[in-house]
Image 1 (tube, helix red, strand yellow):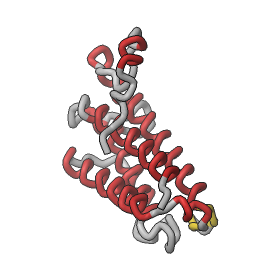
Image 2: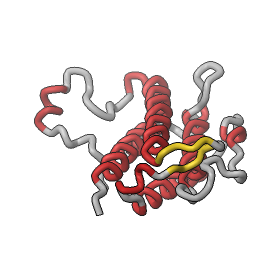
Image 3: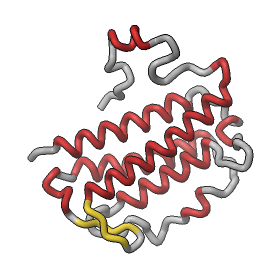
Length: 176
């Protein structure tokens, strides 16, 4: 069973998950709920992404990716949750995603799945979801970096750090 494409996609998902978790570790509980202007907070974005992954990848090959039990709108409502509750929902979404990816084969990439009534190939659905995860991960990291200011610890190559990075370019790759 070849899994070259699926493993590459899973690796990128792991990388984005890791970036968010490293950013999260730099924030206080109060900072998790700070909003940039009228935008979203880190907590809101994490709740949304966790809910999206759980919905999309539960019964991925057999049911519409937008589950009737998901309340997407509530993911964006301003509410305070504990760090533990936030991480629990976050991990639940990622667990469903990785569990599904573990069962897929590259031969299934042409199969059709449905999201909100629209048919997509598995590879289209995966790349769409990966882009969505990257988009919100970037937002979370930017919010965290902005809140931390000069106390921010860089998650990849810091300014003037290219030479050191080039000596160990696999440091940003999260463990499997």
